[in-house]
Image (cartoon, rainbow, N blue to C red; front, side):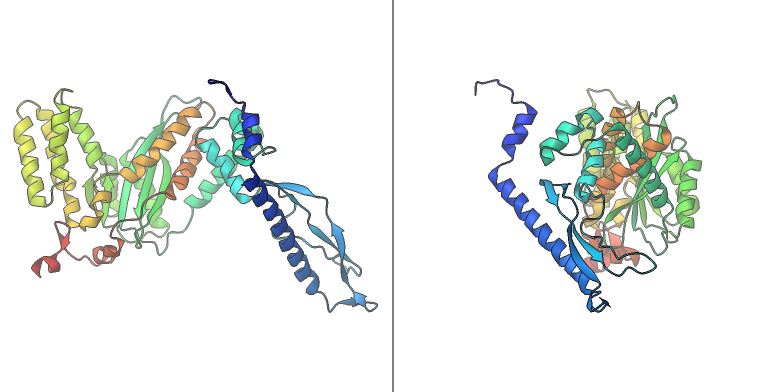
Length: 416
């Protein structure tokens, strides 16, 4: 092939179906056929005692017409066995319905999940046929406009059901809070979506709330937190992490008054540097980094004071922006050192918002407010599978028992 020659996608698909893939597909066909035979044999055996004129009531009766089921390794031909009832009762004849291959099944669940995943990741409707054929082989299902509409409607229903779930018995040790702004179709006002992520008692991060709000106001956060409380979230989290938005913190004090506050260092760094000239920002950023990376609270205070002494005279607004949240910025020192990497920023939310912004930017002209909210929910839910478990999650039990930590170490271990 000459250099620079472009291979059409269709040709690439054909050549990608190598011998190994074909062997796997054929093996899957045989295994599925054997499983269906075992399933129908078990069904017939259930009625073996029922006799009609000395003969079995249920007998095998061939197969239904073959149909193709799209799987992750391409199309697989399926012939579902059929039975005949020779003595139907008043309720009608007995029929065999496979649980492995239900009626009208055309795509496996993995393929069903792949379609919204591709859409949410930014693949346009027109590009679905090529994308799915490249992944699943020729004959892969496409995605029509009507299918996209059904998916969106399903996501809205799913979000409403998830929003109304019970939280009775739930306990979140840490919370991360933030908001994202999107612009729905035919709407000049930006949609603010409030997101909460929590850490469960076993150290796993979990999506807690995805709600529409009016900016990041106190009232919006108050409604969200009170609804969570009404759904059964009775115990106060130990620590909440967020940016400097006053709305969330005012609402938090009214609902979970015992929850401590930790300001996000990523947001605070950006806010401080925005009040300084660009030429000074790299050096100032390093000085801020030395504060929150200090080994002990004492060292952090020294680095904090040094920053203020260095920049207060020339950049008073930057110094004031940092100084006003000193206690909240250093709250993480009272928690296990293994947890610090998770507690110093709202990174669990920020990393998810990158994907959200990508998809909502591509779909801004075809989403209303309700659909955009449901899409953000689905994106956050998909991202949840990749959230890291809390380092040192076994120490959560100590945090819940209010064991005192000094500079990230249990007090009793310091004494020893």
